[in-house]
Amino acid sequence: MEDRASFRSGFVTIWGRPNVGKSTLLNSILKYKITIVSDKPQTTRKNIKGILNHPDCQIVFIDTPGLHAPVDPLGEFLSNQWKSSLFDADCLLYLTNPGVSVDTDEIYLKEIRNFPHPILLVVNKIDLFKKGTIQKTIHEFSQHFSFHDILEVSALTDVGLEQLIQKIRDLLPISPPYFDEEQISDVYERDIVGEMIREKVWHHIHQEVPYGVEVRVEEFKEKENLVSIRAIIYVEKDSHRKIIIGGKGSMIKRIGSDARKDLEEFFGVKVFLDLWVKTQLNWRKKPAVLRRWGYTIR
Image (tube, rainbow, N blue to C red; front, top):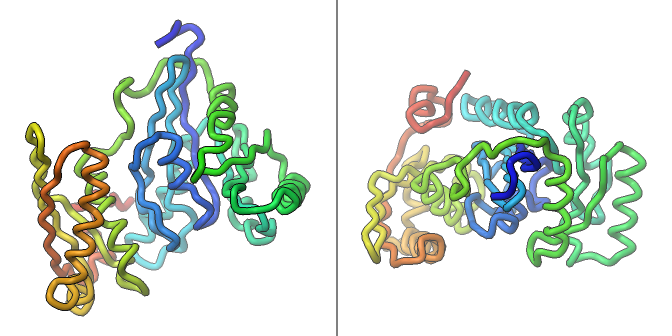
């Protein structure tokens, strides 16, 4: 890395309503898939830190669960997650999409009005909209809220990402890196594995079932040309277990096949994936189970 006297390092929270591309943006910036991408709200459950290492800076991005009205102990955990992410950040990216009314985002903007550091408006998915629509959105948001700067990007095609990274770098404090240069996240590999599997459940299963799913990796072994994984998909009801398994095991095979492809791309070797489905009744309402699974309830 370059001269420590000019090295910059800090934390950047990615904020915005569901489905604006927060997780896709983080994965695209890092060039690694470390967080779930889904069009369903409340997919992200824990603050996930993605670490971008450049010769002159280290940017630690925080992908958050977003606003959540707690109805159970898990909801309480999610609410604490996004609140803590705002206090931890040196800079905040507010993501929105062209064509979105500022009234739609008002509840999210309200939460960051007292944020003490720079806030960048990042208009994502510009590859899908005409210039006039993009400019109208920028005008409306800039009239309603005082942003430090406004940037247009496409997380899907990488347009504007280098400019965004440079802008963030310039806003961070002079500081040594917080994490090792080789580190890409603050979560363990087995946790990333669990999230990749859970993502496939969200893609294939609908209605209320995915919200009651938790994936725990029970066995994780790395060999020279093979990664062997055994994971359990937990559900809240026996009826949900039957849905995930599917007729003659068809659904669990589909979930496993799709997850294996992502895992092999991530590890760069063949992956043996052994999936099981078990019922843990009403686990979202049980603090003891949540603590055992890493959801610390205050």
